[in-house]
Length: 240
Image (cartoon, rainbow, N blue to C red):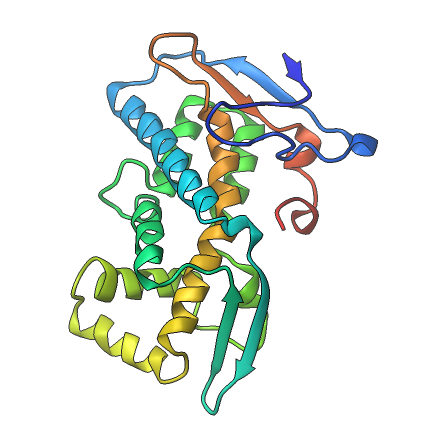
C-alpha cells in the first residue's frame, strides 16, 4: 500500500522524508510476515515509549526553536553559546530521556532497535534505510566545524559526561579524559553541545519510530518504509 503522508497521535511526523509537493515521496505500508517474539515486542514497545517521552520533553523546552548559536575562540579551545538552551538542572531531564537510546542495558538502545527491525522486516529497502540511520547516528553538524577538536565528538561527550557526571562517578580513565576536554571547553559549552546533539539526532529517532509506530500486540502488525527514491537518495540531500 502506498500512502502519501503518515500521521501519529503522539509525535508530529507529517512531512518526514516526504519531500515537497514538486517532488513528492511516498511511504509504503505493509504487514509483518512473522509475529515478533516477546523479546522483540519489549524492544519495540520500549523504543516507542522512549521516543515519545523524549519528544515531549523537547517540545516542552521549545528546543526545536534553538537559534543564534555563537562561537568564541579561547586560548586553548572555544566557547559555544546558544540561546534557548535549558539551564543545568533542566537539561538533566533531557539527558535522562536520551540515555535510554545509548545504554547497553536498555531495550530501547538505538542500534538494538535497528537490528530488531531488520530481523522482522528483511527487505533490501529496510536494510539500506537502517544502515544509513546507524551510520549517521550521533554525527552532528557542529562536528564539521574547525572550532571543536575532531576527537571531541558527540559520542565522546555523551560517553564521558554521562559516565562521570550525570549518572555515574566514572572510572579513573574517564575522569582523566574529562579533565583533558575541560582544559579546552568549559562546562557551559559541553552542556550546549550535548543538548544541540540531542535536538539534531532526534530526527533519526523519529525516522526509525515511523517504521514501528503502528506495531501493536492487539492489532495488525503494520510497518512503514519511506519511498525507495528517498532511501537511495544522496546522503547529503536526505539525511542532513
